[in-house]
Structure formats: structure tokens, C-alpha cells
Length: 92
Image (cartoon, rainbow, N blue to C red; front, side, top):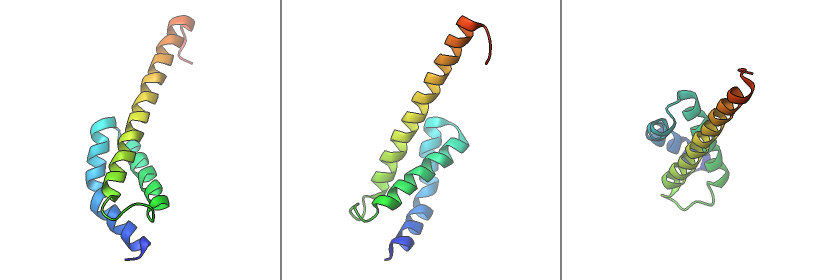
């Protein structure tokens, strides 16, 4: 099967499961779409390097890591906002 057909099949078959997985972690629809898009972009770049049958695991690992990064970033941003408001008493 050609790479493009294989990629389309993977996207069609796994997107709903991957979306549910990502949403369970970040609870943000737009973030989920971005994360899944990034994961499939990474998959496309490595499609020839991944053993057949390991694409699903690759996608889940990338999405998990990107969700964790998103959560960490959100927590850091919230801490900064609290710090800023505490010391400067302003929103911006």
C-alpha cells in the first residue's frame, strides 16, 4: 500500500480513539485537534521508519507527551498569572 493511502487509513481508523484519549487529558477541543494534527504530522515524517503495526503506539505516545506538555504549560501560565496579580495587582 502506498504511503499516502496508508496514512489516510490510519487517520480514518484512529482519529476518533485518539481524540477521546487526548480530550480525556486536556479537556479542550481545539487543543485536541492541534495535538492530534501534530502527532499525525510527526507520523507522516516517520512513516517509513516505523515497523508495520506500531503506528498506533507511536501516535498514542506522541499524543500523550504533547498533552502532558500542554498541561504543564497551562499550569505554568496559571502560576505566572497568580504571581503577577499578587505583586502588581493588575490583570495585564
